[in-house]
Each structure stands twice: as structure tokens, then as C-alpha cells.
Amino acid sequence: MKSFYLQNYIAILDFLIFALVISSLLFLLSYFIMYQTHDKELVSHYECGFIPFDDTRKPFQVKFYLVAILFLIFDLEITFLFPFAISITGLTLTSILSVSFFLFVLTVGFYIEWIYKGLDWHETNIHNK
Image (cartoon, rainbow, N blue to C red):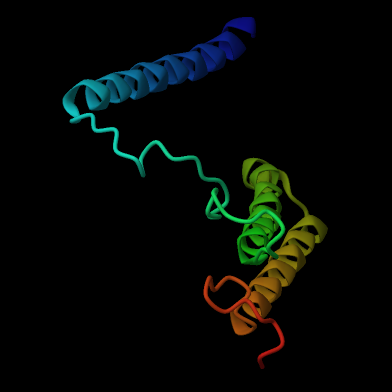
């Protein structure tokens, strides 16, 4: 019984080692093959799409934060689907209906975001409908 579980963990460990080796190899190859240029714009500091050398008292636009928060909300909701996908064979009708309702609410929320252009970068006014 223990060897069965150990074989599962060894398969996961093999996959992680393979992923680490491939990603390290690709990173090193891209570092040595790519032509290295360091111009002024490449090494300038920036964060969240704002110009770093501007007046700090100027009001900032919230559109980046709005899109980022919406992405986090939908991304975290999608992570709730992984336990459902893993245990799909042992689910009852109640749990399937619960997950279906969850997916329905998620779809309605995404549709409302789409209608009010909450995910559009250039138009973030949610009252333009």
C-alpha cells in the first residue's frame, strides 16, 4: 500500500524536476543567445503603468487597479473548481447542482463585466450604458 502512494509522489517529483530542468535550460539559453542592450527606456523604473518621473500629487487613473482586481476575483473563483474536478466521480446531485449554480453566477458576473466594459482598458466608466 505504501509503495503505491510512493510511486505517485515519485511521479510528481519527476515532473517537477523535469519542469525545473527545462525552464532553467530555456532561461540560460535565452540569456546567452539574446543580444543584450541596455538603453534608457529598458532600465528605467516603472510600476503599474505610471510614468515614474511625474508629479506625485497628480490624481492617478484607477483603470489598472480595476482590471487587476477583477482578474484576481475571477482567478480566485476559478481555483475553487479544482477540487470539483478532482472529486468529480464521487459527487452527489446536490454537489453538482451547487457547482452548476456557482458557474452560473460566475458567468453572469463575467457577462455584466463585459456589458459595462469593466475589462476594457480604454473605457472604464461603468455608468456609460
